[in-house]
Image (cartoon, rainbow, N blue to C red; front, top):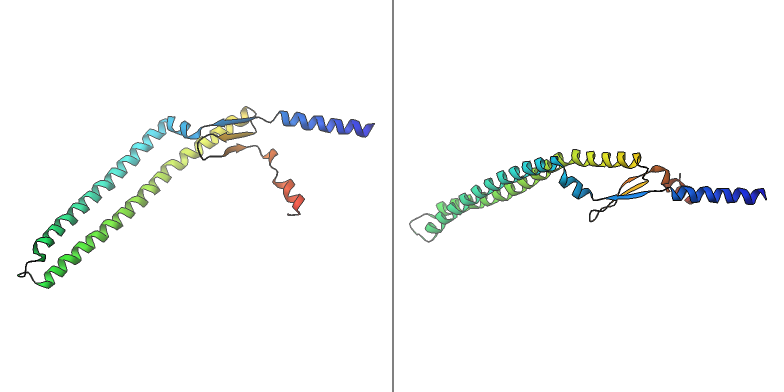
Length: 169
């Protein structure tokens, strides 16, 4: 009889513990977009993007001007072949510089975006975890498209039990 009572108590305790598990969700993308810091970051990134676009437009115009000049002399027999080769090489170099500038700009923009957004993401994640703990939530899922769990209470982690079952230390 004591064993049955003990088993019943364990089952009740387990059911009670499971009933206390609270799950919440939040759209982190929407949250971040509503933060004042997001506007500032967006403006900084737009300004940097515009700077790189202006540099690329200038380089493209320079290349087009030199190309048009080459087209004017390409069929002119009075211009030496060596001059034509130099002009052709100059255009090829400008095209290469343009491609390198595109890559450099893209890399710089990506680095700046990461630099500016990482602290914001950390602040959001920390705040969500704090609010979740304060309100007794075991899990908080991100309802943004393509996202997962933002916060989980470690006491619900099955890893140690599964490892033990598999004989992994």
